[in-house]
Image 1 (cartoon, rainbow, N blue to C red):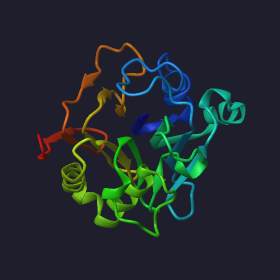
Image 2: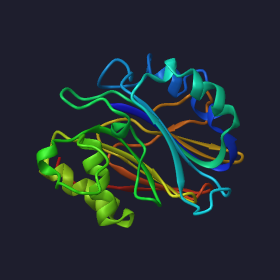
Image 3: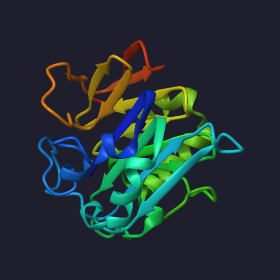
Image 4: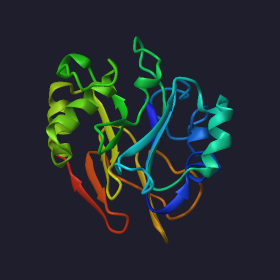
Length: 234
């Protein structure tokens, strides 16, 4: 399992989203509060963000196979990285899966950033030359990218039908939208005065956090948040 977070709104520093909150991804890497599977997330981390300063307008990423709490270089640079659209994640590797930077979310197709919090049998996922790693999350990301983000809900439901034990919490962003699914684990939303946070678990004790029901598709443009129930096996 993993923990992930997405921000869409006014530019914020990456540190303010991942490192500074009292229960942010940094703390969730060693002491998550609501994680149902696994005790910590020490098998890597990653962050991706969109910036108007990049020539091609695509996302930029920083990923590692080391625990987030031990990366002094990231801690020193993160306050200077600012974006209005961020996806961050810390990883707990499934048994038998490699621990390498390319196995850490977020994955990308050049337009979207995507994180998977969960587990799925790789046997139900097609092989893809576009997959960044051999881990289940990378294969799932490649399938979602190949089928298109507009079919995310259908893809999640179909994968769940092939693997009833799968946990399929997806979080994705393209610079102007955040899209997520809940399927087997937690996700919460916080609407702030300047944007929206989607996170595996609240990063502070703000009373505005709302838990999203299981088996739902979530979409926001940074203002309104829309939720749609997903169909699938019981």
